[in-house]
Length: 198
Image (cartoon, rainbow, N blue to C red; front, top):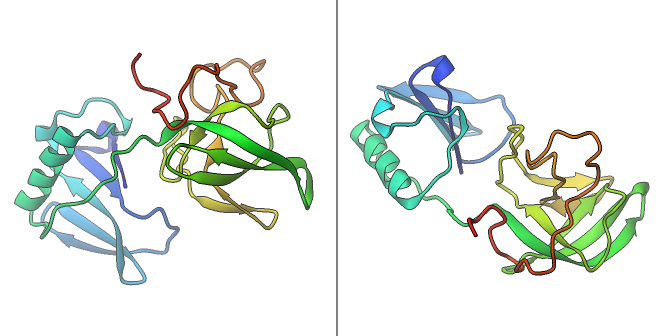
């Protein structure tokens, strides 16, 4: 689940439960617009959220206290049950265990990346990707600084679960010179939150 706030369009939050493409069905009940796809609830648009004190536009960094505050507000506005959210980090340190050429694309590699809690198969097009590196992995559900949401994908017939990130994709630089994935110092721990304060 991801929550977005944009003061430009008004006092709204946009809640994405399932990142799917439309067409959608919409129903309004007071301040809550429920968004469905094929009868399944995939999101909500909620107005009248000034009490949350949100100030920056874009993805909302969720914490347990903020999520409790959001759930209290939603229930006050008529939502029947609280939303459940996975607050585990979405940008984590991964270790590239294997890196092999894609069977059907010269410029792509198929990697196996250990992110601590699981091993992910990720297709990567960066020229500098190699076995044995520590890298930044955007897991499925992560929202990139560009606003793009990471989803399960298939690249030239090979499933890919997440993205290995460059400095530019992470919003750490806007330099055209910084091409390729960000390779981390070996001191970083596999599975740790890349953005954690040290």
